[in-house]
Amino acid sequence: MNPYLNIATYKRRFGQTFLALESRNFRLFFFSGLVSLLGTWIQSLAIGWLVYRLTDSAFFLGLVGFAGQIPALILGPLAGVYADRVNRRRILILTQALPMIMAVILTILSYTNNINVTYLIIIVLFNGVALSFDTPFRHAFLLEMIGDKKLLLNAVALNSTLVNTARFIGPTIGGIIIASYGESMCFLINSISFTGVILALLAMKVSPFERKPTKKSVLSELKEGFSYTFKFKPAFYMILLVTVTSIFGLPFQSLLPVFARDILHGDSQLLGFLTGAVGAGALLGAFFLASRNSHKGIPKIIAFSAITFGIGLLVFSLSTVTAISIVLLFFSGFGMIAQFTATNTLLQHSVEEDKRGRVLSIYSMSFMGFTPIGSLLLGSVSSVIGVPITLAVSGGICLTAGLLFARKLGFINQYLTIHNRH
Image (cartoon, rainbow, N blue to C red):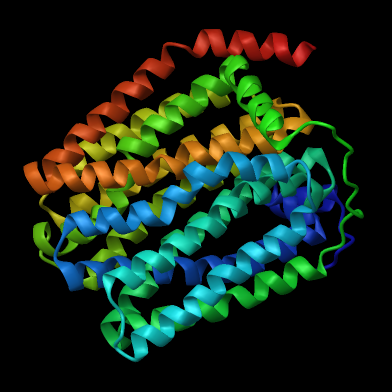
């Protein structure tokens, strides 16, 4: 692909949907990241299946989910401060190297039959530490990577498309690999998949990093980031909605092995199809956002998507028919990612540049940091009242949150209009 193709050429060939691929750096990031994320989702499915095979416990599924994401709650805001201070590309290389090492260790333990739940928890905890830095740094690095704010809206959406293409394809491949070769092969594939994205980051041509002089302490900048986010009302309402969705909605993914085996009476391949259905819907949601060329109407998209997710999760919890469950998970995936991608896009567009890393770290914390609390909560509750009832209540809460956000649309649009004038 010619690195010198201009924006007009991309619009003629691909329309608005793939506009950000005009950037050579973004192309490197996009295609290498796809390979890496495929490996990540293959491994994620294998870990969930392995945990349930070893323990037969929904609680341990929730506990492993908790261990993998709780670092984001503790470290995410701190990572945001440093995302506004240090060389983002160097940190991103480190956040890829650490999970690659963990995948190698996991492969060795699995092939030698020395794997147990304790080791799995420790490994996903280290992965969670890497992810808690990777997410805010990656989001903040996007504009630096592409070098043109006109491409930012499309780059954010394509970044989400990247994640959800892997979410769609990876688990399906993972389910087949587990059935044919076992979990160990999944871990090996993931350990190799990080190589491309590390090389891509090294090959990118970006402006030399210039450290911005500051006399403020890390703590004061952290406090400034929270204060700015909470006072900027559209950001506050969007992040509050994402937090509720993360606590009560996103943990449903860690409970899918229960549905695959005990409710729908399937195997690892069915788990791959269920997870893949979520990814397919998420992929459509990401493409839907990528095809837009304006920020207008995004708050309405957030409300619609949140309501769609809540309804999808609520009805899925009651389904005992495989085909219906797959369709419902497709709509749930669409609503989930369309909501999160639209929120990310609007935050990227609206916040002040010198606070971008901190605001995006709080956004990352809201969907990564609180999800483990929900995983632990839902895992504990489901062991008492059952997984279907637990998810039905969770879906109802997410639906209510979406409806309440919809009532604030008039205020949010008015606030953003005044803010954009200044």
